[in-house]
Image (cartoon, rainbow over all chains, first blue to last red):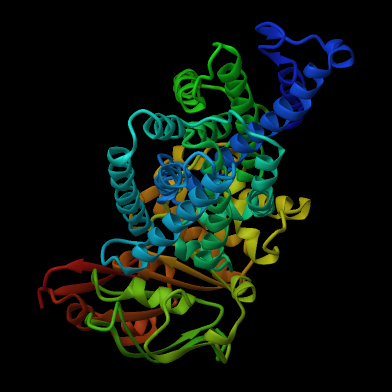
Length: 325
Length: 263
């Protein structure tokens, strides 16, 4: 039964459109949309694209998290671990350092995307050459090594950065957030996020099989290596795109898949769409808090980690939280 | 027993990697159709490797596997999944799939890459559980089952594939006496219906209870093969395991005991 989640997402989206700090902190009256030109511009040019981006961010991270945890048979994996998060961070820091103030708005995002994807490619290439353990273990190890490589690179760039201007910008990027996101930023996400998410949803029954051992999946007439690579690339490419735009937003991709599985069971036919919807709701709510709670923006990554960890503790300590299907 | 073999293995050579020692060394064997064949041999003699080569999962460096006279390598993946099913030795299921969800996975060879199992697939999965008297477990998460239940549920998953050939890797290795008896009864029922069953075991009792055809294996080679009663004798088993073994008859059934006979 997924429709209550879908409905909840729509309600959260609709309400969030009117939550903010204009004209005062709290709720923007819908009546203002007719009366106040500024309110209209604010809601449709700033809030709406940002809300949709937050939704796509949450959906992508939660969906990719479900895919990666299933494919790696490891519930501790999060979507950025294959060098993607740290790669994006390195790219963004490099962009902030080299492009300066006059750069086009999406230039940093583009560089971050390139490095996020190269993190994935490097992890994959390294995993193929490692002489240790099985395929899953090799990918995990390669991901850790490539992430460490990029994160030390981020350290170097922070050291080189101008402490008054560039360093705060890098730090803020690393904490994650969607402030200043426009329709252009949202459109930039779609070519990665839509195919990635479509692939995940279409192959969700197949995901179950990829959680089994390779020889068992093979005996069922599948080609586990090829299918695993396909869903993996789709999920991680989408993650790379959203990470490049939002910065590092932690815990959504780790926690939401657990909550979805706890509530709807392990079968990805239901657990994956549930994770997408829960991830969307969670990210939109966190972003509402990020832009409303204080006069200044609170970095989104801080809120997702804080609330994600709390939600995790709350949900996983309930013994029974199964939604009847 | 039909005369044409279900599997013909011709001069199989296999090693894990180019420098690794060969696990299968020029192994040739015919496995009869419609009966239960046990591959009996000591730990590490290459039984599981042989089973994985017969499945097609491991590709031999030399020789070939024929299924009903056709080269296994030329059979498309999904068709192979409708021909041969596997019950692995210890299936680790990392997430809380329910028993029904897990058995449904056996329907995969009948589904396209983007298909979902249909109502018909659900019906077949449930029927398979009923046939093994496991239907009361259908909602239970697989990781919470006991070892015996889990082995039977894994068998149900393989049987939901509705294949004429079933491979089992050490099916009784982790089972207590009661579960072992139940599993072997089920296998006997399958062979009675014409399924070709090929199982590996290091336990002579499992072989003598389950199989009509016996293969003795040691160091990647077949020592002997033939009808159970001809092959299961003290001399051959002693050679297979490298320790003195004797075979006595109890209630008309050969029983294998450790130690030298008294005369």
